[in-house]
Image (cartoon, rainbow over all chains, first blue to last red; front, side, top):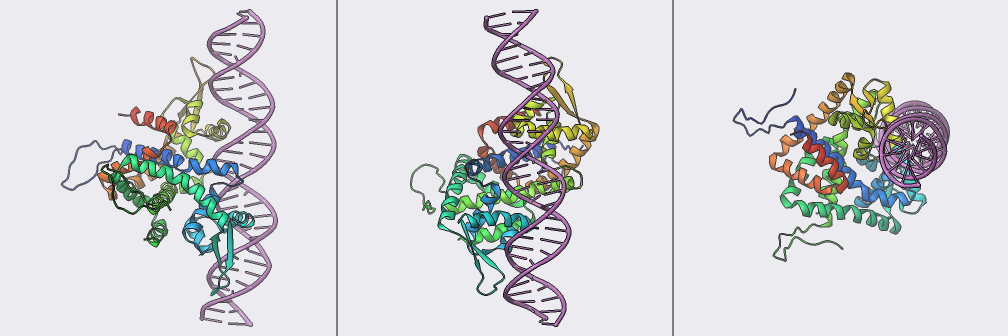
Length: 169
Length: 169
DNA sequence: GTTGGAGTGTCAACAACACTGACATAAACT
DNA sequence: AGTTTATGTCAGTGTTGTTGACACTCCAAC
Protein backbone atom coordinates (compact mmCIF):
# COMPACT_ATOMS: atom_id res chain seq x y z
CA UNK A 1 0.00 0.00 0.00
CA UNK A 2 2.87 2.28 0.80
CA UNK A 3 4.81 0.71 -1.98
CA UNK A 4 6.43 3.03 -4.43
CA UNK A 5 8.24 1.59 -7.40
CA UNK A 6 11.67 2.99 -8.07
CA UNK A 7 10.59 5.60 -10.55
CA UNK A 8 11.69 9.15 -9.76
CA UNK A 9 9.17 11.90 -10.22
CA UNK A 10 10.36 15.23 -8.86
CA UNK A 11 13.55 17.17 -9.35
CA UNK A 12 14.74 16.76 -5.77
CA UNK A 13 17.37 14.25 -4.76
CA UNK A 14 14.76 12.17 -2.95
CA UNK A 15 15.22 8.58 -1.89
CA UNK A 16 12.50 6.24 -2.98
CA UNK A 17 12.51 3.59 -0.36
CA UNK A 18 10.35 0.60 -0.95
CA UNK A 19 8.63 -1.22 1.82
CA UNK A 20 10.95 -4.11 1.08
CA UNK A 21 14.11 -2.06 1.44
CA UNK A 22 12.95 -0.74 4.78
CA UNK A 23 12.08 -4.22 6.01
CA UNK A 24 15.51 -5.40 5.06
CA UNK A 25 17.00 -2.55 7.05
CA UNK A 26 14.90 -3.55 10.04
CA UNK A 27 15.97 -7.15 9.82
CA UNK A 28 19.61 -6.24 9.31
CA UNK A 29 19.39 -4.22 12.52
CA UNK A 30 17.85 -7.15 14.38
CA UNK A 31 20.41 -9.73 13.29
CA UNK A 32 23.36 -7.42 13.63
CA UNK A 33 22.44 -6.43 17.16
CA UNK A 34 22.30 -10.07 18.11
CA UNK A 35 25.79 -10.58 16.77
CA UNK A 36 26.89 -7.41 18.46
CA UNK A 37 25.92 -8.63 21.94
CA UNK A 38 26.72 -12.30 21.45
CA UNK A 39 30.36 -12.27 22.55
CA UNK A 40 29.98 -10.36 25.84
CA UNK A 41 26.84 -12.37 26.59
CA UNK A 42 28.81 -15.56 26.32
CA UNK A 43 31.49 -14.27 28.67
CA UNK A 44 29.01 -12.94 31.20
CA UNK A 45 26.92 -16.11 31.23
CA UNK A 46 29.73 -17.91 33.01
CA UNK A 47 29.80 -15.33 35.78
CA UNK A 48 26.68 -14.33 37.66
CA UNK A 49 26.28 -11.26 35.47
CA UNK A 50 24.09 -10.29 32.54
CA UNK A 51 23.80 -7.64 29.92
CA UNK A 52 22.68 -5.05 32.43
CA UNK A 53 25.96 -5.38 34.31
CA UNK A 54 27.89 -5.02 31.09
CA UNK A 55 26.15 -1.77 30.23
CA UNK A 56 26.78 -0.33 33.68
CA UNK A 57 30.45 -1.30 33.59
CA UNK A 58 30.86 0.06 30.09
CA UNK A 59 29.50 3.51 30.82
CA UNK A 60 31.20 3.84 34.20
CA UNK A 61 34.46 3.00 32.48
CA UNK A 62 33.66 5.52 29.82
CA UNK A 63 32.76 8.38 32.13
CA UNK A 64 34.71 7.78 35.35
CA UNK A 65 33.36 9.59 38.39
CA UNK A 66 29.90 9.83 36.90
CA UNK A 67 26.94 10.06 39.24
CA UNK A 68 24.15 7.56 39.62
CA UNK A 69 21.68 9.99 38.18
CA UNK A 70 23.77 10.59 35.09
CA UNK A 71 24.12 6.87 34.52
CA UNK A 72 20.37 6.57 34.92
CA UNK A 73 19.81 9.02 32.10
CA UNK A 74 22.28 7.31 29.80
CA UNK A 75 20.95 3.83 30.39
CA UNK A 76 17.30 4.79 30.36
CA UNK A 77 16.20 2.42 33.13
CA UNK A 78 14.65 2.98 36.52
CA UNK A 79 16.82 3.61 39.53
CA UNK A 80 15.54 0.42 41.14
CA UNK A 81 16.71 -1.56 38.19
CA UNK A 82 20.10 0.12 38.08
CA UNK A 83 20.48 -0.09 41.81
CA UNK A 84 20.13 -3.85 41.84
CA UNK A 85 22.95 -4.10 39.34
CA UNK A 86 25.18 -1.53 41.04
CA UNK A 87 24.72 -3.16 44.42
CA UNK A 88 26.11 -6.46 43.18
CA UNK A 89 28.96 -4.78 41.30
CA UNK A 90 29.97 -2.80 44.38
CA UNK A 91 29.63 -5.84 46.64
CA UNK A 92 31.85 -7.81 44.27
CA UNK A 93 34.47 -5.07 44.26
CA UNK A 94 34.22 -4.12 40.61
CA UNK A 95 32.82 -0.64 41.15
CA UNK A 96 33.41 1.83 43.95
CA UNK A 97 30.99 4.53 45.01
CA UNK A 98 32.27 7.69 46.68
CA UNK A 99 30.21 10.43 48.29
CA UNK A 100 30.52 13.68 46.38
CA UNK A 101 32.80 16.37 47.76
CA UNK A 102 30.79 19.39 46.76
CA UNK A 103 27.34 17.83 46.79
CA UNK A 104 27.33 15.09 49.36
CA UNK A 105 24.05 13.70 48.07
CA UNK A 106 25.71 12.45 44.93
CA UNK A 107 27.66 9.24 44.61
CA UNK A 108 30.52 9.17 42.16
CA UNK A 109 31.13 5.84 40.48
CA UNK A 110 34.45 4.43 39.36
CA UNK A 111 35.75 1.08 38.26
CA UNK A 112 38.20 -0.65 40.57
CA UNK A 113 41.19 -2.45 39.13
CA UNK A 114 39.16 -5.66 38.94
CA UNK A 115 36.36 -3.72 37.27
CA UNK A 116 38.71 -2.34 34.66
CA UNK A 117 39.99 -5.82 33.96
CA UNK A 118 36.51 -7.17 33.34
CA UNK A 119 35.64 -4.12 31.27
CA UNK A 120 38.67 -4.78 29.10
CA UNK A 121 37.76 -8.41 28.63
CA UNK A 122 34.21 -7.66 27.56
CA UNK A 123 35.19 -4.71 25.47
CA UNK A 124 37.97 -6.60 23.72
CA UNK A 125 35.52 -9.18 22.44
CA UNK A 126 33.08 -6.58 21.23
CA UNK A 127 35.74 -4.38 19.68
CA UNK A 128 37.24 -7.32 17.86
CA UNK A 129 33.94 -7.99 16.15
CA UNK A 130 33.39 -4.32 15.42
CA UNK A 131 36.90 -4.00 14.04
CA UNK A 132 36.42 -7.00 11.77
CA UNK A 133 33.12 -5.66 10.51
CA UNK A 134 34.59 -2.20 9.90
CA UNK A 135 37.56 -3.65 8.11
CA UNK A 136 35.46 -5.86 5.89
CA UNK A 137 33.14 -3.00 5.03
CA UNK A 138 35.69 -0.28 4.38
CA UNK A 139 35.93 3.37 5.46
CA UNK A 140 33.06 4.73 3.38
CA UNK A 141 30.70 2.09 4.68
CA UNK A 142 31.77 2.87 8.24
CA UNK A 143 30.97 6.53 7.77
CA UNK A 144 27.56 5.63 6.38
CA UNK A 145 26.93 3.23 9.20
CA UNK A 146 27.58 5.95 11.76
CA UNK A 147 25.46 8.47 9.92
CA UNK A 148 22.42 6.23 9.70
CA UNK A 149 22.74 5.12 13.32
CA UNK A 150 22.91 8.68 14.56
CA UNK A 151 19.82 9.52 12.55
CA UNK A 152 18.00 6.57 14.07
CA UNK A 153 18.53 7.61 17.70
CA UNK A 154 16.00 9.55 19.69
CA UNK A 155 17.11 13.11 20.18
CA UNK A 156 17.70 12.70 23.94
CA UNK A 157 19.87 9.69 23.26
CA UNK A 158 21.75 11.65 20.66
CA UNK A 159 22.72 14.05 23.43
CA UNK A 160 24.13 11.31 25.62
CA UNK A 161 25.90 9.84 22.64
CA UNK A 162 27.32 13.16 21.54
CA UNK A 163 28.70 14.06 24.95
CA UNK A 164 30.50 10.73 25.15
CA UNK A 165 31.73 11.03 21.63
CA UNK A 166 33.27 14.42 22.23
CA UNK A 167 34.69 13.66 25.65
CA UNK A 168 37.77 11.86 24.36
CA UNK A 169 39.44 13.73 21.53
CA UNK B 1 47.41 0.37 24.43
CA UNK B 2 45.78 -0.68 21.25
CA UNK B 3 45.76 2.87 20.11
CA UNK B 4 47.14 3.55 16.68
CA UNK B 5 47.29 7.09 15.39
CA UNK B 6 45.89 7.72 11.94
CA UNK B 7 49.16 7.42 10.07
CA UNK B 8 49.16 4.95 7.20
CA UNK B 9 52.20 2.75 6.86
CA UNK B 10 51.74 -0.03 4.34
CA UNK B 11 50.63 -0.01 0.76
CA UNK B 12 47.37 -1.80 1.48
CA UNK B 13 44.08 0.00 1.91
CA UNK B 14 44.04 -0.83 5.60
CA UNK B 15 41.82 0.84 8.13
CA UNK B 16 43.51 2.10 11.27
CA UNK B 17 40.81 1.96 13.81
CA UNK B 18 41.51 3.50 17.16
CA UNK B 19 40.08 2.14 20.34
CA UNK B 20 38.07 5.32 20.53
CA UNK B 21 36.53 4.91 17.09
CA UNK B 22 35.48 1.38 17.92
CA UNK B 23 33.96 2.44 21.22
CA UNK B 24 31.97 5.07 19.43
CA UNK B 25 30.70 2.46 17.04
CA UNK B 26 29.66 0.29 19.97
CA UNK B 27 27.81 3.14 21.62
CA UNK B 28 26.16 4.21 18.39
CA UNK B 29 24.87 0.68 18.07
CA UNK B 30 23.53 0.73 21.62
CA UNK B 31 21.70 4.03 21.35
CA UNK B 32 20.42 3.41 17.85
CA UNK B 33 18.98 0.04 18.77
CA UNK B 34 17.09 1.68 21.60
CA UNK B 35 15.60 4.17 19.19
CA UNK B 36 14.90 1.42 16.74
CA UNK B 37 12.72 -0.53 19.19
CA UNK B 38 11.21 2.45 21.00
CA UNK B 39 8.15 2.99 18.80
CA UNK B 40 6.88 -0.61 18.67
CA UNK B 41 7.64 -0.97 22.38
CA UNK B 42 5.38 1.96 23.15
CA UNK B 43 2.55 0.50 21.09
CA UNK B 44 2.92 -2.96 22.58
CA UNK B 45 3.08 -1.70 26.15
CA UNK B 46 -0.61 -0.79 25.96
CA UNK B 47 -1.54 -4.30 24.95
CA UNK B 48 -0.41 -7.33 26.91
CA UNK B 49 2.45 -7.89 24.48
CA UNK B 50 6.18 -7.30 24.45
CA UNK B 51 9.08 -7.30 22.07
CA UNK B 52 9.06 -11.07 21.72
CA UNK B 53 5.53 -10.95 20.34
CA UNK B 54 6.59 -8.31 17.89
CA UNK B 55 9.44 -10.43 16.60
CA UNK B 56 7.22 -13.46 16.18
CA UNK B 57 4.58 -11.48 14.33
CA UNK B 58 7.17 -9.84 12.13
CA UNK B 59 8.79 -13.04 10.95
CA UNK B 60 5.54 -14.96 10.55
CA UNK B 61 4.27 -12.11 8.41
CA UNK B 62 7.51 -12.24 6.49
CA UNK B 63 7.50 -15.97 5.83
CA UNK B 64 3.86 -17.12 5.87
CA UNK B 65 3.34 -20.82 6.46
CA UNK B 66 6.69 -21.16 8.20
CA UNK B 67 7.12 -23.91 10.78
CA UNK B 68 7.78 -23.45 14.45
CA UNK B 69 11.21 -24.92 14.02
CA UNK B 70 12.15 -22.53 11.28
CA UNK B 71 10.99 -19.60 13.36
CA UNK B 72 13.07 -20.96 16.21
CA UNK B 73 16.20 -20.84 14.11
CA UNK B 74 15.53 -17.31 12.96
CA UNK B 75 14.75 -15.95 16.40
CA UNK B 76 17.48 -17.84 18.23
CA UNK B 77 15.52 -18.62 21.38
CA UNK B 78 14.41 -21.88 22.94
CA UNK B 79 11.27 -23.48 21.66
CA UNK B 80 9.70 -23.19 25.11
CA UNK B 81 10.23 -19.45 25.07
CA UNK B 82 8.76 -19.09 21.62
CA UNK B 83 5.90 -21.39 22.48
CA UNK B 84 4.66 -19.19 25.31
CA UNK B 85 4.52 -16.24 22.93
CA UNK B 86 2.86 -18.24 20.16
CA UNK B 87 0.28 -19.63 22.55
CA UNK B 88 -0.96 -16.19 23.52
CA UNK B 89 -0.93 -14.99 19.93
CA UNK B 90 -2.95 -18.01 18.81
CA UNK B 91 -5.34 -17.69 21.76
CA UNK B 92 -5.88 -14.03 20.89
CA UNK B 93 -6.58 -14.89 17.29
CA UNK B 94 -3.61 -13.10 15.74
CA UNK B 95 -1.84 -16.21 14.51
CA UNK B 96 -3.19 -19.52 13.30
CA UNK B 97 -1.35 -22.81 13.48
CA UNK B 98 -2.12 -25.62 11.09
CA UNK B 99 -0.83 -29.17 11.29
CA UNK B 100 1.41 -29.98 8.35
CA UNK B 101 -0.09 -32.01 5.51
CA UNK B 102 2.97 -34.02 4.61
CA UNK B 103 4.66 -34.08 7.98
CA UNK B 104 2.06 -33.96 10.70
CA UNK B 105 4.67 -33.19 13.33
CA UNK B 106 5.10 -29.71 11.91
CA UNK B 107 2.83 -26.72 12.53
CA UNK B 108 2.54 -24.09 9.84
CA UNK B 109 2.06 -20.56 11.11
CA UNK B 110 0.14 -17.73 9.47
CA UNK B 111 -1.15 -14.35 10.50
CA UNK B 112 -4.90 -13.93 10.69
CA UNK B 113 -6.49 -10.73 9.47
CA UNK B 114 -6.21 -9.25 12.96
CA UNK B 115 -2.60 -10.35 13.05
CA UNK B 116 -1.85 -8.64 9.78
CA UNK B 117 -3.45 -5.47 11.08
CA UNK B 118 -1.25 -5.41 14.17
CA UNK B 119 1.79 -6.27 12.10
CA UNK B 120 1.08 -3.29 9.88
CA UNK B 121 0.68 -0.96 12.84
CA UNK B 122 3.95 -2.00 14.43
CA UNK B 123 5.80 -2.12 11.19
CA UNK B 124 4.52 1.29 10.10
CA UNK B 125 6.02 2.92 13.17
CA UNK B 126 9.35 1.21 12.72
CA UNK B 127 9.50 1.81 9.00
CA UNK B 128 8.71 5.48 9.48
CA UNK B 129 11.74 5.88 11.70
CA UNK B 130 13.91 3.84 9.38
CA UNK B 131 12.73 5.84 6.41
CA UNK B 132 13.48 9.13 8.14
CA UNK B 133 16.94 7.94 9.13
CA UNK B 134 17.66 6.69 5.61
CA UNK B 135 16.44 9.91 4.08
CA UNK B 136 18.52 12.07 6.43
CA UNK B 137 21.61 9.99 5.81
CA UNK B 138 21.41 9.62 2.04
CA UNK B 139 21.85 6.66 -0.30
CA UNK B 140 25.58 6.17 0.14
CA UNK B 141 25.26 6.10 3.90
CA UNK B 142 22.44 3.58 3.62
CA UNK B 143 24.58 1.28 1.55
CA UNK B 144 27.39 1.57 4.10
CA UNK B 145 25.00 0.93 6.94
CA UNK B 146 23.83 -2.29 5.35
CA UNK B 147 27.35 -3.42 4.56
CA UNK B 148 28.62 -2.96 8.10
CA UNK B 149 25.56 -4.60 9.63
CA UNK B 150 25.89 -7.64 7.44
CA UNK B 151 29.54 -7.93 8.41
CA UNK B 152 28.59 -7.75 12.07
CA UNK B 153 26.17 -10.69 12.00
CA UNK B 154 27.14 -14.20 12.96
CA UNK B 155 27.40 -16.39 9.92
CA UNK B 156 24.34 -18.49 10.85
CA UNK B 157 22.31 -15.31 11.21
CA UNK B 158 23.57 -14.12 7.89
CA UNK B 159 21.95 -17.19 6.39
CA UNK B 160 18.56 -16.41 7.88
CA UNK B 161 18.92 -12.81 6.84
CA UNK B 162 19.98 -13.70 3.33
CA UNK B 163 17.10 -16.06 2.72
CA UNK B 164 14.61 -13.43 3.80
CA UNK B 165 16.33 -10.77 1.78
CA UNK B 166 16.17 -12.81 -1.38
CA UNK B 167 12.65 -14.11 -0.89
CA UNK B 168 10.94 -10.96 -2.15
CA UNK B 169 12.47 -9.65 -5.35
C1' DG C 1 5.17 -55.06 11.75
C1' DT C 2 7.36 -53.62 15.62
C1' DT C 3 10.64 -51.08 17.96
C1' DG C 4 13.79 -47.34 18.77
C1' DG C 5 15.63 -43.03 17.74
C1' DA C 6 15.14 -38.46 15.86
C1' DG C 7 12.20 -34.51 15.10
C1' DT C 8 8.59 -31.53 16.75
C1' DG C 9 5.67 -29.29 19.83
C1' DT C 10 3.62 -28.55 24.77
C1' DC C 11 3.40 -27.93 29.87
C1' DA C 12 5.63 -26.55 34.32
C1' DA C 13 8.93 -24.32 37.12
C1' DC C 14 12.59 -21.10 37.70
C1' DA C 15 15.95 -16.97 36.95
C1' DA C 16 17.15 -12.38 35.10
C1' DC C 17 15.82 -7.91 34.58
C1' DA C 18 12.75 -4.61 33.47
C1' DC C 19 8.63 -1.98 35.64
C1' DT C 20 5.51 0.70 39.35
C1' DG C 21 4.64 2.40 43.91
C1' DA C 22 5.83 3.64 48.48
C1' DC C 23 8.96 5.16 51.68
C1' DA C 24 13.51 6.72 54.16
C1' DT C 25 17.54 9.56 54.49
C1' DA C 26 20.51 13.18 53.79
C1' DA C 27 21.87 17.32 51.71
C1' DA C 28 20.88 21.46 49.28
C1' DC C 29 18.02 25.31 48.13
C1' DT C 30 14.68 29.21 49.17
C1' DA D 1 11.39 25.84 58.51
C1' DG D 2 9.79 23.86 54.43
C1' DT D 3 10.66 22.10 49.82
C1' DT D 4 13.22 19.98 46.42
C1' DT D 5 16.87 16.89 44.84
C1' DA D 6 19.76 12.66 44.91
C1' DT D 7 20.07 8.31 46.36
C1' DG D 8 18.86 3.81 48.33
C1' DT D 9 15.58 0.18 49.64
C1' DC D 10 11.46 -2.94 50.08
C1' DA D 11 7.67 -5.21 47.96
C1' DG D 12 5.07 -6.64 44.09
C1' DT D 13 4.37 -7.60 39.05
C1' DG D 14 5.24 -8.71 34.06
C1' DT D 15 7.97 -10.18 30.09
C1' DT D 16 11.25 -13.17 28.38
C1' DG D 17 14.74 -16.05 28.70
C1' DT D 18 16.29 -20.74 30.66
C1' DT D 19 16.06 -26.25 31.88
C1' DG D 20 13.53 -30.44 32.66
C1' DA D 21 10.01 -33.64 31.58
C1' DC D 22 6.78 -35.49 28.41
C1' DA D 23 3.68 -36.63 24.29
C1' DC D 24 3.10 -37.32 19.46
C1' DT D 25 4.75 -38.28 14.78
C1' DC D 26 7.81 -40.00 11.39
C1' DC D 27 11.23 -43.06 9.52
C1' DA D 28 14.31 -46.67 9.24
C1' DA D 29 16.51 -50.80 11.02
C1' DC D 30 15.59 -55.00 12.84
